[in-house]
Amino acid sequence: MSAEAGVIHDIGYRRYTGRRLGRAQILRALYGHSLRSAFGLGRGAKAKIVPVIAFVVMCLPAIANAVAVANGNARIVPYDTYTFQLRVVVMIIFVAAQAPELVSRDLRSHVLPLYFCRPMRRLDYPAAKLAAFMTACLLIIEIPLLLLYVGTVAQLHGGSAIWGQTKALIPGLLVGLMWAVLLAAIGLALASLSGRRAYATGAIAIYFFLTWILAGILITVTQRNVVRAVVVHPPKGVGPPPGAPPGGPPGTFIAREVTQVPTTAAHLSGLVSPFTTLDGVRQWLGGTSPGPLPGVGGYGALYGAMFLVLLAVCLAGLAARYRKAGGL
Image 1 (cartoon, rainbow, N blue to C red):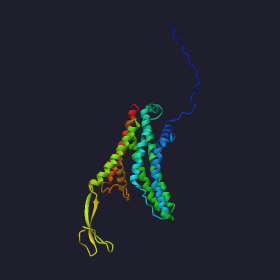
Image 2: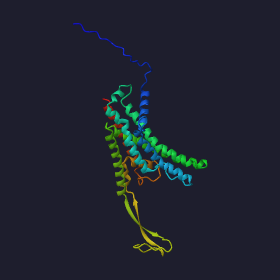
Image 3: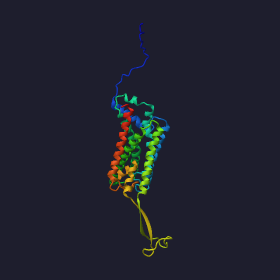
């Protein structure tokens, strides 16, 4: 028996004859594509809803400040804390919605082997995704700060006043960088655990919200109430309220004033949440604007260590996840 000879048919496909790009170009392309995905660019209008709303809402305090400064008032929004609670809510929504967009789709579609068959290392993929998402978070956080700065200095006259605003802006930008790095790392680490976007979004939102609420509760309940007696001078013709204890000079009355004094437990309760950890690091590095923490006491270095531990755990988890996904 003789085997039949095979026949090769030329059906017209053209061979690639251009220059083959290397690892650096692959990383650059993956970074650019991921950054566009974080803002829904190149996709339908539905994909842009969350990024656009998050950006607009984050810019509202800067716009309100510009109006106030134009009417002759001083700057009403601090650079280092901005509007803390608004920033927390907006970033939780943005990270929970957009982090899965960068990694969960590829995991669910099982296309990672197609990436890894190119001349790139296993950790290049998560590194490019992380850099892109850090950039996206940085844009959401820092552009409102720059608008706040521009809206303030536009009404100032004199180089010293402008330089004072510039010196106040720089720490705010550095705080924003800390936020972007830590939140992006946590968001991608949690999103990479599931290929289903709904599960990844839920995991991120639950972690951020629960730890934020728990930290707030612990800070409140661990503070000590101190009651002090103060002398009140009512306006002329106005007597003391019913039940006010007598005492003090004529025409005055004694009132009880309750103040909350932070304890050691209150100083340490902020370690529960990434957001209060970030505020603890800010206060430790010299931030003076009021934040959710009633000070860090002598535990500022512990907040710095917690920041580094959270970041290291997330980066290690992300690397381990993609070593496993890559078949190593």
